[in-house]
Image 1 (spheres, rainbow over the protein chains, first blue to last red):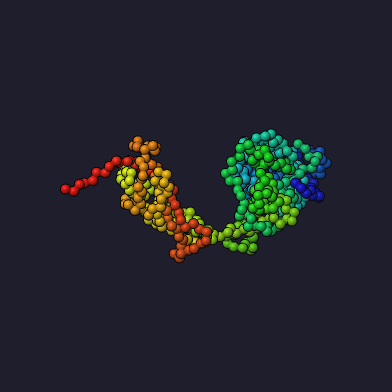
Image 2: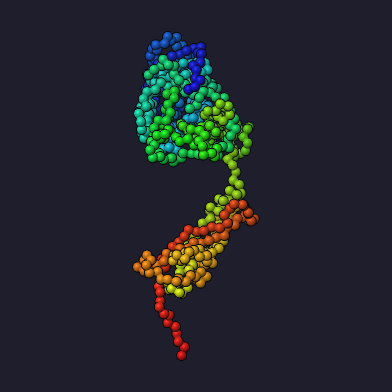
Length: 182
Length: 291
């Protein structure tokens, strides 16, 4: 993403977890803190990390909740369901338009992306107003059956979130830091 | 892909969306295949991949034969050098549309994205009002709704025509009258029976005949040669392939008032119908002799 810059953060939270986006998340609107399949406890990051407080733990949980709802919405949309309401509680701005256009184009082309991505090594950085979530996203479990060419594997993937009107929303893709590898 | 969080600009060229081509029902062209088309920031999208690239350059909305942009990813059309796509309507819930700026009740809130967009004037949300149907468009639509009746070719003498003796030809149809097609704005296309066009099948060309839907001599043709040597009909007799079509004069009315629109067709022809007509040559005609 051009021009994507990690914002200066006042309170940095680093969380490393591993998990698989499950189909059961599609359409989930609950305030579940973590999706099924995720390990409950963060593992230790190589980055020096301040002790999480109750507040920061709540923030990261809220961010991850939205993060996984975004993925669930994207999976549902790209499986032949170009419905913008899938993104209503998790995504804002141009990204919703892009997700809708992508889903519509897939329907037009007869493409249905099957399965779901496997997400691991999730890292969250956040301040009061914005956050970034970096993760290793395994696309080999989320495929277009008719697609030819090399199977897409694990890719470092970043999402930017903003705190708007009292809630977190995914707003854009960002490049993870160069030292974030999968 | 979206590049950063752009300031939303008013889309100055919303009307261009009228010409947005779609890929609905697109088939994969020969030599192309489904595959990965973009990968950025870990995001992968799929589409039709062709040897020369994901999509051919197009002339977009310019009307020029020269390509003005290269269409990749989501882009569907060109505005100059900009490759653009649009959501009509946008992904925004209707409840969030800015009603205070809505230009008309029919307007739809849309989103357009173009790249490159250095002036940031093409990308953003805007109102788009679908063009209202004009009377001329309604008239064209009404014309297209005119349906000519099914018919078969009738001829007499029945079974076999005779060289040198007039063969009567007519259209056999129970629907022999006026036909109409109705469209929006009260526009009606009215087709009045005007005549028949008949090709006797002997190489003499197409004849124009009076309208005739019953057995009569209104439309007659006299063959000069027998049909020997022609393809045989269902009875095994050599026959000329006689073609016929119905011809209508078309006029238009709008709410009962005559409507004149330049450029509209004023005639309508049905599809051709063909029937084999055997033609025999009789050496002598026997006539009654008065005592």
